[in-house]
Length: 122
Image 1: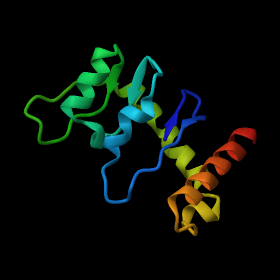
Image 2 (image 1 turned 180 degrees about the vertical axis):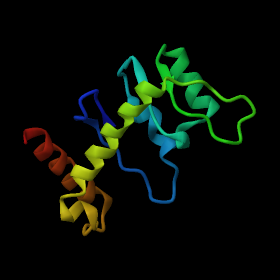
Image 3 (image 1 turned 45 degrees about the vertical axis):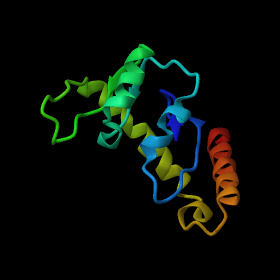
Image 4 (image 1 turned 90 degrees about the vertical axis):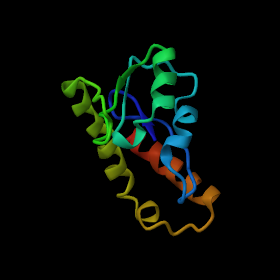
């Protein structure tokens, strides 16, 4: 899920349940050129960070604990990451998304997109 600075959804991709979300991170970003990318520690991978820096995007991803050299981040800017979490909370108010009634990925994604549209309209 990618959201803008106001917490509105920009792009939603569905990954297989057994794969890490970072594998779709570059696709989720697409051709957008945000000023900064805020993400949690799960997105702390050298290849992804190098890709972001090559595109001149500020990296606001805290370093994992096992990194030898810890990267400094803007803590004030990182606090805005809660907008993604708040959007997920609003999305999960739709019971069909929260309990994942749909067994097929295409049906689940379609309803998640519909629920995202409803959130945008409200």
